[in-house]
Amino acid sequence: MPDEMSEKVVCTLSAKECETVVRNALKLSPDESIKIASYTLEKGSNDLVGFMGEYFKLRVQIADEHSTEGKRELCCFVKSVPVSNELQRAECERKCFFRKEICAYTAILPNIQKYATTKLYAECYYARSDLLVLEDLSAAHLGYRHLTSDEPYTHRHIKLFLTHLAQLHVGSIAWEEKEDVNIGKQFEGSLFELMLIAENAWYVTGAKGIIFLAKNYRKFQTPEKQPLINDKLFTLLMDMQKYTEPSTRSRNVYLHRDSWDRNIFFKFDTNNEPTACCIVDFQLSRYAQPGLDVLFFLYGQTTASERKLHMKEYIEHYVSELQARFKELDLPPDIVIKAELLEDIRRAHLPALVIMAITKPLTMMPDGLSNKWRAEEQEKFDHYMNTQRDEFFQRIMEMDPSYESKIMWPIEELIEYLIRNPDLWH
Image (cartoon, rainbow, N blue to C red; front, side, top):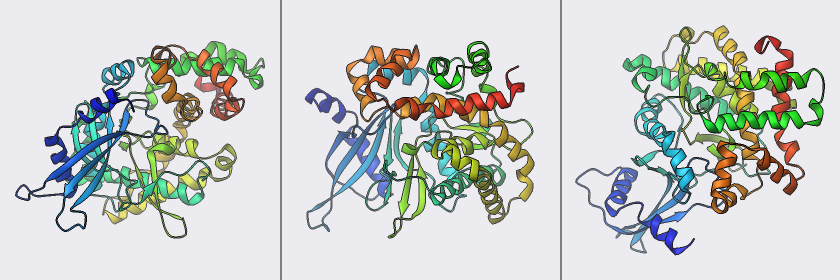
């Protein structure tokens, strides 16, 4: 990292702020003393893709007379508004991503956690308007990690995460029921929709990208599909926000809404079987019915053939986990009516496919390319993200001949879904 950036990063947190981080991390009382020997902020590795933030590791050396070295180290994960890219930073600030996430970590999640039996999220040690300091889930004493690129999601991973979602969702209901809270009303100013809205240039650009890819895709060159793609699809995509709004008749819950694999950490036993999971990144969180949370995960982490065989099984698992938690928390079993929940999940297929069709081309970029282009071609990368992606797709396809096959499956499923459901666009 260049010296100029190192200095800029090191100055991001003051010594007083670091002391606050340590006190919160170690859960010290006001009368307990602590001495910080030194601290550093290190740029996160290039494989950390953050479209609305930059990542760092905070390492704090704490004096400890009981240690053989006379000190011990606390390592934390730091998420900051973009430091090195002014255009990206401006977009992040304009869309209030951090306002939403700070509210999640400091005001909402700690209350939901009280009603869960598993650790739901990475604890927040310090927050300010442009920065979050979180516990490092990958630290040895916590033992969580991402799946590697050659580790597939098995039935066990999938059901474990669906159980995790059920804990999050029921925890939000329990908080409301037992403490007379309405999450949607109390936190209305932070639970706004950031993705599927026509006012979001990133989303509109993604929608135009879907049409560009679909229009030129060899499998879609038919009289049935081309009129849909050319004449109907954009209007349909600009009307997705209605699928994200809280229900006026069915129970709403607190949603994560961004469970792609880089936001999911797993813990394993000695046989390398997953035993627990945890989620990070709540910038897209909402208060609405749970279907979109469930389907975003299932579409993101399963193949079409797996969904054909196991989608019903996975949804039934989620429903049964919800019902089990209601019973354990002494909540009425009909607080979420199963028929309404299944209808919500059925309705969520369309927006879930739209999200996949927009995000897969970004998450499937060759390793390190996003960070490289963002650093070396700031204005062009901003143009790709918020204006037009035609050239973006063409450049990557030239670099990686397999890219098209990696990104077209959600668009194929989206178009096929619309063909089967013409009432959605006629």
